[in-house]
Structures are given as C-alpha cells and as structure tokens.
Length: 182
Image 1: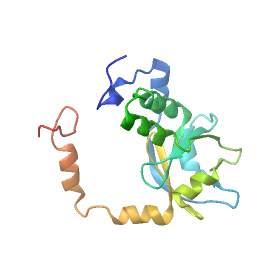
Image 2: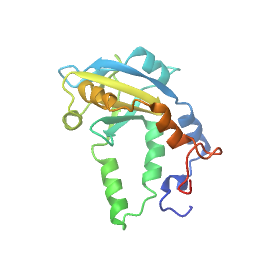
Image 3: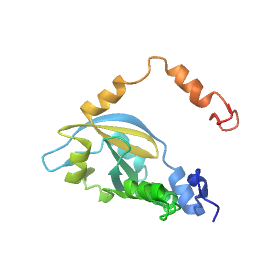
Image 4: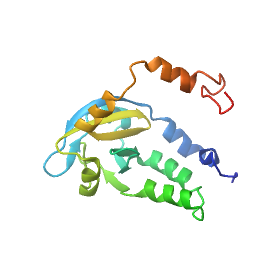
C-alpha cells in the first residue's frame, strides 16, 4: 500500500476485475423525472441502457453529494470509491470528517422490475426534492437534483466557459491539468 496524503486517490489499488467493471461506465445525459408519492424515481430507458446494457440487475448505492444533491453509484463504482476513502487516516481530524461526510446517508438500493429506485426520505429531504427531479449522468456516477436547485446551479455557470476550461486544463499537456507551479 502506498503512502497516502494530499493525493489519497493515488493510493487506490483495484484488482483487475473491479477495474474492468468500473471502466464499463461512461454515462452521459440529463434526464427530467418525477418523484412519485412513495419516493420512487423511474430511471429513464436511455439511462438504464447505459447502466445495464446486458440486462444485468440495477444495484446502486446512493449518498449525499457535495452540494445539496444526491449521488447514485452502481455498486461496482461504489466499491471503488469506498476503497479510495478507506485509505484515509481516521486519526487525522480532517480525514476522519471526510470519511464521515462521505458515508453519511449511504444506502444500498436495487431498482424494481419497472426500473424505479426508492430514495430514502432523509435523502429526499437533504436534497430538497419535492416532485421534479433531474438526473445528471456523467463518467461513472449520477447526480440526483431537485429540478429547481439544478437550474439554480446552471444559472451560475460562467458566461465564458472557455476561460474556465483554459484555467483548469490549459497547463500540463501530460495530464491536462494545471500544476501548482504554473
């Protein structure tokens, strides 16, 4: 196991099967959905095909996002994320807090035969979801937003996205990310 510190993500060591499974996911799309009276959201067909192209069962873990939204991970991705976070040092206050924040509200879910997921009430309340929901799928996770909060985040987007992209990606050609030295 490597030394963990500022870049604790680099300490992750996945076995080949786990890595191949998480490499399968490259989600893309924004989907507007409705929360039913029982707290369920039907996953759109296009998204289900991205998650389970071979008809495998839809098993997830959901937890709180960094902002007031929820994160939905296929279980193979959740396992990868937990291996990352579990590398942190519980004897370091900030790292221990990060572990707590990450796991708060984490719940295993399984879609039903109608491709619906039941979102726990405490998470619905945390995200401020009433009825209208946006699923924002990218990379290997799905953000679940109350539609009004998602639109508020979109309203904060910079007018000149190219300047932001240049600031973030314009430096280091090898990684695409700027270093602290630039």
